[in-house]
Image (tube, rainbow, N blue to C red):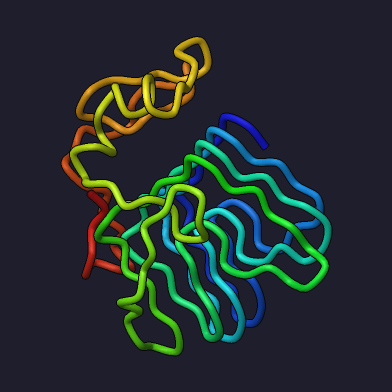
Length: 178
């Protein structure tokens, strides 16, 4: 999966809730972002992948800018959980510094900011809407992405659907996105 994004509300009533993929086997993801919300009542939640179930995964140059992620078992901003006999290669992944992670209803305050870790590196809202972040830091192609200061990237064939300082989800008004 390359050069994609989602602003969906992912609600799993039982198992894996991932912003891009719920449960994965042998997957490569790059230049992707998730700006929606994800929750899973029983198992795992991840901003990009909730569960790497088998094989290998590569997640690179990806961003999670959600207001929150919630799970019943384990959550991380980029990759929720990996099972035994799996391997992940994570690099240059980022997440909004104010993204809240909840496990069993309790706010997780032990987020580890690391571009090569399960939570990605923490970045500010200003960084997330900076063209230099996507163009220089992540090296996303302007042939594929429309990248403008003050806006989140969209694919080059799209037009900006909103002009706002935040994305507001009526069902979850407590935390608008940056």
